[in-house]
Image 1 (tube, rainbow, N blue to C red):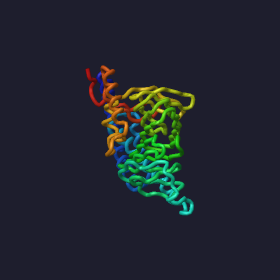
Image 2: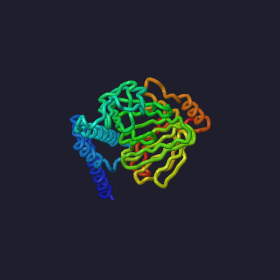
Image 3: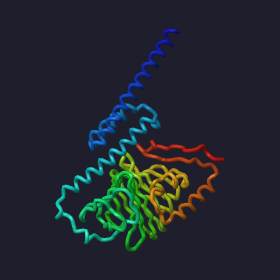
Image 4: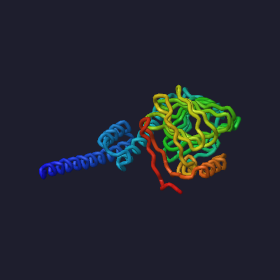
Length: 326
């Protein structure tokens, strides 16, 4: 019996040794991945960071090193997309673009900080500034630590906010392709439908009355959607769902919608940079505060949580910020 327990202890020691070795190697891969990203060697960086993730496959999803590697992967992939679009645009001849004086004012820049560029169709603008026009067909690239707010010019019925390593095409009056990053959308019209595309899925968002919602491109190429205002109908493939303020769901690459979850709007209002990072508040911020208060009053037990990324239909990142209130 004594030899049996000694054998168990020996195997436990080997497992612990193996885990420590995996952590050390993963840390070195992370350091190398960060270095490669800083040198703009994005493909090599993604490969080495994926190797690091492979080493931690059996570790808990909330392990600090695993979370840090996932964060760096998102940063690297975002920078890679921005770099690819910049190179593609720089290879075009000047004669391939329309002159800036002809650019229509589909949107106008209402707020901006950091570096934002717009390309395609018209001559490139390397750095968008306040009141610059942004016409349909433009690709807007938001660099890290930057943000932009656009408002439709005529009629003034649509507001868009994007920030932090995001890229989107303003395809038309009711279609946006979001390749990476984050987008907040506010619609002031009745009976409006917006079509959005992510790298691996697409989505229809509509309502009979004015509404607002937020979008994030997830690691798997889908969307994370959070309803802020209004009664919103989401449709993806054969899946349909109605969401209300505080509802969150994921749009998955298989053209389906995840189960619906509820988040605390008051927490979102102080944690989301799409809401807090701009000098001027959202035009409908008072209505959003009212929704947050109504949600709090009808909820007896609340958890302050942040919902992160999605890897599959059941693997959601959810972090509780506080203990439940009585």
